[in-house]
Length: 141
Length: 86
Image (cartoon, rainbow over all chains, first blue to last red; front, side, top):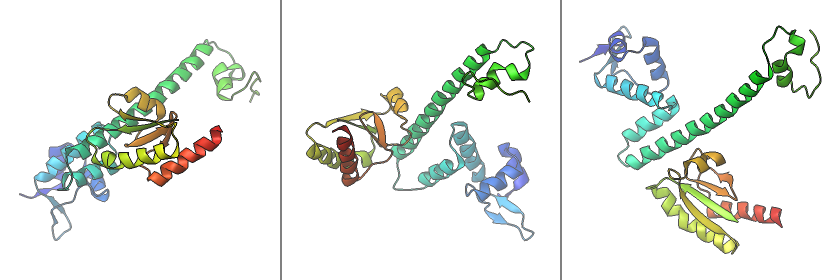
């Protein structure tokens, strides 16, 4: 069964642009092209697209997903190889979360420093702190 | 000097390389303390050190290798650290 790009996009709930992008990124390939250059896909493309979307939801980048797909078709690979990639991804996410928490705390400090009154911008403690003013007042613009 | 090898259990590359690295480290300095950590059991500590790829090696709580070094690379890193601390 050959499906057109529009049909596949509809069934997989992605846009046709996304499918072309996946193709440029080497994640999916049409099974054939018609004489007029229209892409045709087999049904297993839907499974592959679902794989890509779910991996993206777990934080994997397209490059990493390509590696996962390569592993999937590598006879010498086994589950522990995939697990290692998953553990690495978790570590990367946790490091990001940690750094975002630090950013959030910094923002809390800035927000607490400002009472949100109608002060002129030159006296804005948030802008002053971002400029690293060290007690030096911002110049009025 | 503390060397910590972060691994995910069941990693054959880690097991193969571990013994050679440990021997290289212990030959260089008798003060070497070698620890092997399951990253899933020590997740917070791994994150604290910035481990994002496995296997990884930290020397004295500093992430030094994000992939397995050769025994020679490990020896060089340890030598630099010994020089710094003496």
